[in-house]
Amino acid sequence: MNIHIRGPVEFEKILNHSCETAIETTRARMAVQQLLDTQESSQHLTKQLRKYIEMADKMLAFLSQHHTQPLVEHPLFEWSVNDAIILTPCWRIETILPRFALAVALQHAGHGHVADESFKDAAHAFQEQHKLHLECASKLLLWKWKLSHLNHDVLQHKWHVSQADICKGMADLCMLATGIQKQTASKAMFTVSQRALRHFARSLATWPTTQAKDLMNVSEAMRYYYSSDILWSDGQYGQSIYQLETWDARHVEFGPFQSLKTELGKIPFLAQERRHTNDGAYFDAVAAPEPMAATDQLIHTPESTDIPHPSASPAWDAADEATSTPSECSDSQ
Figure 1 (cartoon, rainbow, N blue to C red):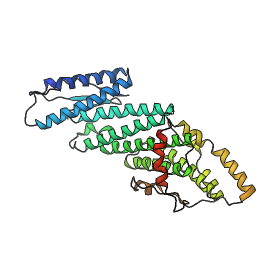
Figure 2 (cartoon, helix red, strand yellow):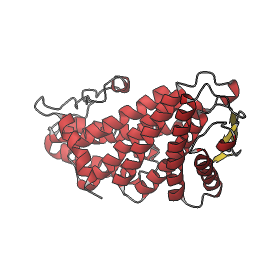
Figure 3 (tube, helix red, strand yellow):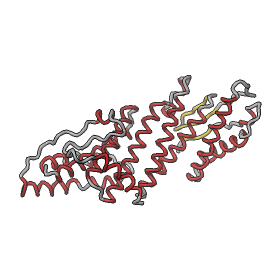
Figure 4 (cartoon, rainbow, N blue to C red):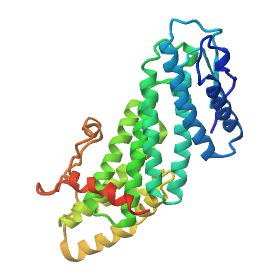
């Protein structure tokens, strides 16, 4: 984690009025500074970051309540993120960068859980990371006078909104990975993959990043994969083969989700098998099926709405089946 506190701040020497938590807040900040420098224990760092975030919030609330009373001196808060120095007298930085540091720690933890196939724990980490990015975005809306030298990604409202969508999409991919383990129905898996696609597409539209683009490709490939299964089950054999051969998994970057890579690695054999079956029994022409929902349509679709697969019968509600999947997934670990 390339995030560091560069300069000490002693809150008890800054306030000229009584603040019972000033010394404790100083100590909490020093503990975070040491752990960020040494990287000794990710669990201890996470614990100390949570503590400092809580105390920094209280400190800012205390200052708001006593805004008419002058400070003994005006502090300068100095951090570095990816070797870029962030130096400002604005107290809000102490409620934003610690949250960002905790979000990064949770991201690393989530990736580790995915590698261990502990998808429930990974999803929990990504969901908490999502919440932290939204909190950062909310606090940045209140900081309206940033100078040009503070034009860093981590201090931009839209960047955090984009990262929050990536976190939700990552949680969806964890659900997909769990669904693969449990052999969940293809219609539910299609819906979950489309939810992931929606989140990564929103992220890319809000703040373009390579990560969002790569993960959008992963979720789109999974959507086509399960669309093929749905079409095959509905007797639309040629269209199923067309969907299955649309994406070449060899050109997709899967990040930590090797189980998804393994699943899509089955495509060449499955396509060959389906072509053999179709040529010997069904003789259905290989052609493009009715288009699925486009990414721009998904971006503007409310979170509570799932667009069904084009071939789904009116009696089947994808949202209902997919909604049951998270609880099923949580029991798998």
